[in-house]
Length: 311
Ligand code: A3P
Image (cartoon, rainbow, N blue to C red):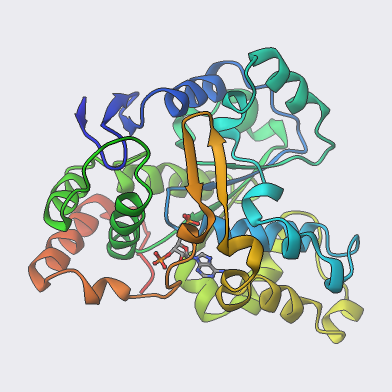
């Protein structure tokens, strides 16, 4: 048990720090009871690495022929409403069996977001022969820390006092953050992506920011929906990028008002998922010393892995 962020405490489970009650129950459900289909696509992330953005990008890419831009579901339903978080799926109904039936009734291909570490997914999802695919989003840990600290203090669930940046920093560096250690979460998916590149598409938040056209194309190919030459000529890629941009999504009424209920005790104001959406905002919060320490941990942890965080 360790001091929590937003939650009273985090619990160490299989080497990762997991928030208690419904989130831990959800992780255990995924690990032991979830039955994947070969067509399932998972958007796997650590919290605050851009899940909301990529939910929108994947949903819009996958369903681009089903909707006109003028009545697109992203305009009337937030990204979280269109793309369920698998980890909390079983907690959304009062009865476990109702959640299982609802999971079974989802049409294929099912799109799920998840924060569950790769090592905790069942073999039936991770085996090379299973057919399931994962898109993993990695973000620079300094931006993740700042984004997480601000988010957690804003969206406290119970009567837990906010924590200072210094305390959040110490905990984060020691690996104590929701679904942390952050570096271990990233490395689990990174190593698996090297072994099975056709199963795991490993993307960086910063790369998507720098060159969205290239990376939305990669995303589309990976999920089995490559853009045709005609779509390219008609600017379909750019249209999706504009639709899912921070400027567009954060200004939609649906994303500004109300709360997203993930489980009976977890409801988060939708507007909290949109803050700045920039690369390098950590410079406005972390001291030089803090940045150096995180860089040092990153150098140590990523040594020999071939992975470098985006800048
Ligand atoms: P910041 O706090 O740095 O602004 P998640 O969705 O995983 O919770 O991540 C939230 C982070 O993604 C926040 O980062 C948020 O502002 C940013 N974000 C949300 N929508 C985005 C978008 N459309 N484009 C880029 N970043 C976005």
